[in-house]
Every structure is written in C-alpha cells, then in structure tokens.
Length: 332
Ligand code: CP
Image (cartoon, rainbow, N blue to C red; front, side, top):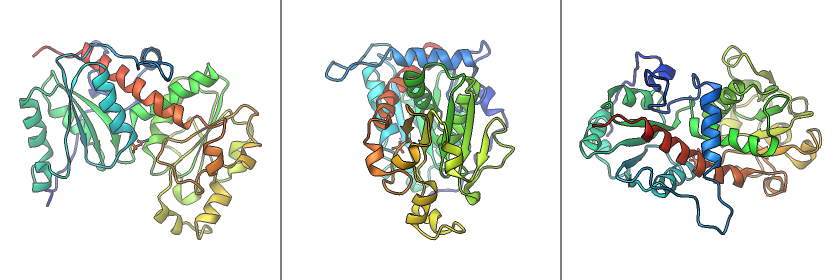
C-alpha cells in the first residue's frame, strides 16, 4: 500500500521554476512565464519539426545527461513524446515502471527521488494525480536537477499548453485578434488551464470557455476568459475550437444531461456545429479522445482537425523544454 504523503509547498510554484536570472530551472506551470519566454520556447520547438519521411530532427545537446520518466498516472502521448524527445537529444532515458517501483511498497516519493538523484538522474519528468507533486519534488531536489511537470491532477499540464500554442501559431500566426473556444469539462481540465494561461500571456483576442454548469470553473479563476454553457453561442465565429475529454462517469451526474447522446447533442463538437465557427476554423483535442462523445468521429479525422499535428508538436516542444533546462543546469 502506498503511504499517504502531503505534498504541500510553501513557495510560489511559478517563482520556484525560475533561476535568479530569470532562466528556466524547472517547468511546473505556464503561469508566471512571460511572453518572451513562451515565444522563445515556441521558436525553439519549431526548429525541431521535420517533414514526415525525413529522419526526425535530433542533436547531442543532452549527451551524458539522464532523463527519468516518472508517470504515476496513465499516459500515451506525453510519456512517449518525452521518451522520444530525450533520446533524440542524445540523453540516457530511464522509464520507471510504476507497477514495479518501490513506491508501490510504500516508499515515499522523496525517497524515490533521492534514490534516482543518487544515480545521477539530471531531469525528472513527473506525472501524478495529486496536486503539487512536481513543485514539491522541485523544492527538495539538488540544485543540479530539473523537474518537468508532465500533468498534475487538474492543475497544470504545461508542455500540453505549449504544444497547443505551437499548433495554433502554425495555423493562425498572430494570437492577437484570434477567438479561441475551449469546450467540455473545464473544471477538471489541467489542459484547459495551461492552454488558457498561455493564450492569455500571448495576448489572444478572445478566449471562450464552454461547459455544462456543473463542470464550469470558478468564474474568478480565469478572469481573462468568458464563460458560457451554450456551445452554439461559444463557437460562433471562433478561429480555434478545442474539445476536451470528459470522463464517462461524470456525464451521468450532470443535471439535464442523462447520457452520452445528450452530452454530445449539447457539448459535442460536430461538423454541423463547426459551420457556426469561422470558415477556416481548426479543431483541436489533447487526446485521448472519446469519439462520438465530446467530438464527432468523422470531424476528428477531417481536414479541419489538427489533432495529429498536436501530437507531432508534442515531441518538438518537449525537445525544446529539455534542451532549455539542460542549458541552465547547475554543474554538480
Ligand atoms: N494529452 C495527454 O496528456 O495525453 P496522455 O494522457 O496520453 O499523455
């Protein structure tokens, strides 16, 4: 049985991730990263994009460094892309099997981290279902170790936010003047939070959040975004429409939405609904998708969809982030 640990942090999470000179030490959240830093990370990511069929972009920047992937929650995209990103930069990569790790036997997360640190792991990529875990670890590691948040409860998923920003920029260029609609379970979405904060920092024209009332965020949480429960209203004229995954069991608890068909009728992104958006609107989804629930299956595979491009960009963004923290890493 896993021991109960309290992951409290006393520092400001956003401040904790920067060195005194403003360079990136850890990546814990997009909150607190300024526009210059975000644009630099997007520019650096863009350099790692290669045409399909060509050998993917690679470098030896992380040669001699060790990256450990510590995923205590399921993942396909984030875990595989961090693994590929680190290998394409020449790092040694350790993918810890959570089912056979000693954390299952009750070892504390800090003892596990200190164990890996003692093996010269330089960068730890962490996904956990509990809030504060990446910052809590960052607070305790030696000053030559970097922590990258790969998905933290419903709080933050900064590399997902960056890959969403990169995908939008590739299609739309400037953020100013864009209308972006994010629809679904906003309340529980770390993706919505990170992407929304990034869009706000980059000066998006208008950000609309659409969700059933029971899945709406606190209206004070993202004061820069508008909030509606009506998707037709929220999607009208949008340049970018992002559908979020909803857990099937949450649908059953929604007032007035007794099942999947009703959820899709009210909050599903379909080709018919997309007719209300801008003629060249793009459709996004962070994955994994529930086809036919939050997004029409044929729309997910249509020319308007950039969902697989988001996945491609995920590797490039993670290469850029790994490279950046490795450059500011203190020498042991
Ligand atoms: N978008 C995302 O985080 O997907 P995974 O859970 O597969 O990593």
